[in-house]
Length: 532
Image (cartoon, rainbow, N blue to C red; front, top):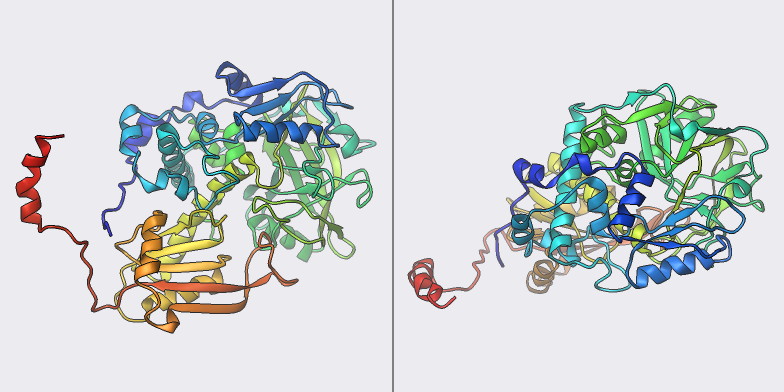
């Protein structure tokens, strides 16, 4: 195989393509830009958000031009709804101010990191779902590089957030007679969902130990049947940073303050789905600091009205509330269809939120993201898994410094990790494999040699076909291993059987790609170049 690895984007190249002045200050300014760019469909006909009229039109757009959709006339509400806002690589690049140069488009054309097979493991209903034209390939790589660069610079506190005394998100404040379903056009997306869900609201929390703010997209069921009118669900993984923050408050017997931000500025919205490489370490910064780096301007936050928490000032809608401590602090919720096209969880008891206030801008716009395997849902997952790749690499290199790279395998929806390494002793690859199976959520782990690019699905399949199977121990089955709630095959304890594959050579076994010798290749190069 080709041992040449694609070159990373240099700082100068990233500077050439990233234009902070193009990053819109709020969601409505971004929507205006999409109108100017013919990237959004404006629907004036009245549609119902709860009987699948609205979601059917969104899915038609996904299956056709795959544009964002703005619904101006939503039955029962004076509030417009926008969907599929960040449902393509190109619109996400627009949101982050990325404009690839002609040289970058050419450079990245054959780079597997920008191919349909390397979207951080994501794929969809159709092969061309992300329209991977040459520009989109370059945009995909540059987005990944920008996020990692912003992460490093936020770590150095280059552009921390600042506080504002007042904010557009509090132009209207509601603290009495709160009925979330009545006040907000929360959409019932798919008939397989148990009801209407708020998503992709960014849930803001504050670590009580260090005061660090965290934002992450969660799922929030809104149902009069299961909850009171002023209660909503908080579907959040117990091992996520947000889940750990809830647990810290509850261990103290205290309610956990939280605020759902619907329609923050575009950069913050994208970062709310991003998994930092410091995800399970000690990040001394917030995603809000990363927003400042991407915008080259500090993000303004404002204090919430009823809880001790800060939120982005230009958010369209903020839902403030408290998650009460045990006992009796959980309610059965679900199911909701996930990006896997299966229900993310069974019906289970999860924490809920007592809504203490809803604040919003004048004439707010409600942002919704289709549940299930929708375009916007999958694109958001890409940024999460890109960060997770880097996080996994940094974690494992602390134990195994000869690991070279990690890629989340094409089409696996985040379930299959491929690790390339330069093996220095027999059994080292097995140690790496078992470490990942035991400590990470991956359902499948494949270990390959360092001459294989883990982001190149064809190279990985070649290694599996030619370097696996000589020994029965090349295949390792680990039963009842912990994973994450997105796996539709988990048991009640979130466990699943996992498979590891060793697609590596023996230490004393060499491989050289068949070709004429180097001297002959160079001798015949000028002859060939006469004809091309």
